[in-house]
Image 1 (cartoon, rainbow, N blue to C red):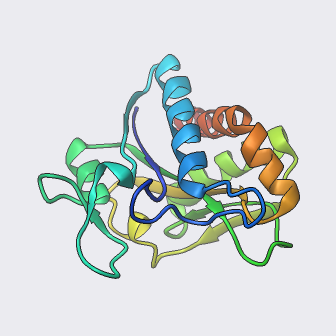
Image 2 (tube, rainbow, N blue to C red):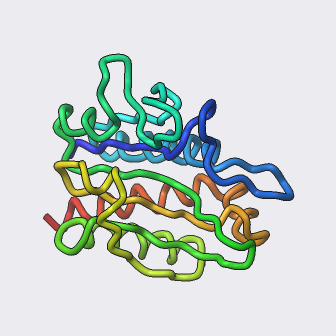
Length: 188
């Protein structure tokens, strides 16, 4: 199985959400978890490609889309590579009291199935609040990928309890995401 891993946000232009007390940045968590997921999936026999938006340059002021040196977006790169599965890794943020894990997909079908496998593994491994699998058809990384795609909101970086997990349990998050992908692969 070819798995394209997209740690959300980037180190230079848009680091994503930031914990107001600790300064922990979403881009840093996503990058670390993404690298770990890649290692676990490769050890399980998957062919993986990882691309964080930090490897790219912004297309213009105010745009949340990024392009690589050949002018391709993350989704175009995944499509051209021929990935079977696309996993974007993020941290959520809202009001410092919201907490838990959710995995987003374009709609039903295989995306929902993959999302549920990953959601189950994270909830079981880390005990985060189960916020469920959610259809988010307007998200660019879900809308413009040709393969089964999910966006994993690991936990809320602005919540004190979730921030501790995001800071100290990155390996556990990565193992759970990788197990969710391999659970999905075994179901095919």
